Image (tube, rainbow, N blue to C red):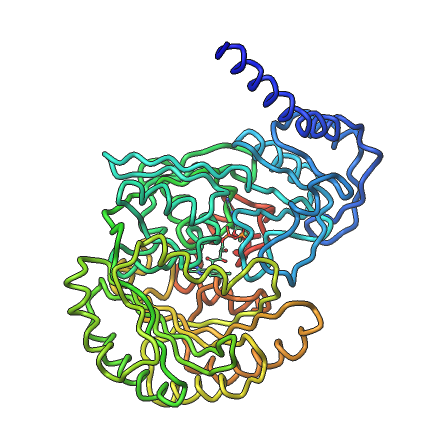
Length: 497
Ligand SMILES: Cc1cc2nc3c(=O)[nH]c(=O)nc-3n(C[C@H](O)[C@H](O)[C@H](O)COP(=O)(O)OP(=O)(O)OC[C@H]3O[C@@H](n4cnc5c(N)ncnc54)[C@H](O)[C@@H]3O)c2cc1C
């Protein structure tokens, strides 16, 4: 009896589950209607023959999506709502084999190619109009080896996926501060985070990567295999290929850490930030504190210090005490908190689909005139979400040699950012105007920038300068691994002629 009802339930499940599956199959099997107009990698209008698209689809395990297909609009969407772009073709990759097919197709047709990991870039370069989007979103597995303290993370995984799996074993490695950010773009650009001062950048914790290069070859890169490529992938962004899997070193972290926010009225911002600058100069690597000048949803202008202590709760209480006692904040939420909760506390503040514009540069300290300018820029805005903030770096990050990886400006102590966020394109003009005029005042205090933290309107010359003494080596690598610049939608390194 029991057995029969189990079979019945199973049958019901299979039947119900089969319905959408059948629909999917039907959509995937429907013949492609005709040739598809597209944009080539140099901006030229081209045509993708129907027969080539049909052939590509037959070679894939994942989906090939064209405009009008079910799932096309959801797949083309990225975090920054300012980029409502329409690729000619989207390949939803389920494994390295799909990535190889997509790269070969893009190269053979000289197509404009965008690579989407978590889809979270500020620059919107993981999508494009008229090109090929190689979408790794379905490729999001995470496997942790708790004994070896290592993790294998697929190229489309989000930080939240990674942290959650690793924290099940009380482990973690440096990852960014918003859990819906992609592992891939973050790690390839460097990867700052709450525990970075203790354990270095996300890319400093890489042991190896699997990557599909522009010639469609699947290669492994590590200190032992293709070490030149491994060097360039740590800070050189998406310039050298599509990474299908990252292998990281993990560390014991939490799972409960001391952390939380201190909130002050903006009238106290100057004195608190001046005190903070001295406090942070002496702080141990375990201390991580971001500062944010922001308007709360009920219209109050405040300074928020967002803290994490990567160590024991008792040591954290001692280390953060001077900061907590300097002035009485309006709010102090610092308490033992699950690391996962700290890592997702900002998620709603940076929700998917709104419009964002961000400018950022590195600073080495917070002198009083910079603090004054930050407050001036912040106070000059009457718009709802226009924070001026600093993200904390330094510590172990700055003890790695400047040319040990492709990451430049390791001596920075903070990344300084102005960020504008708004709901729809009606707000573009006012927000862009505020962010750009604020940045004009703030940029002179900066030296170098984190490309991952910036909107894409940076002059090409400045992008190249920013790679500093690592640029020549990156250009040699680019020439070797991507001589036609197939992967150009990034902080682009040009191949040598
Ligand atoms: C709200 C917010 C918070 C952030 N916080 C942090 C932070 O705390 N620390 C930090 O370091 N950064 C932070 N960033 C910046 C972040 O590192 C970048 O936005 C990063 O590009 C996100 O990666 P992604 O895979 O989601 O991006 P995507 O938009 O998918 O990709 C960005 C670029 O990365 C490359 N790329 C993506 N996937 C692959 C792949 N599998 N193989 C090869 N190339 C690939 C491509 O060139 C692509 O154009 C933050 C960004 C936002 C928007």
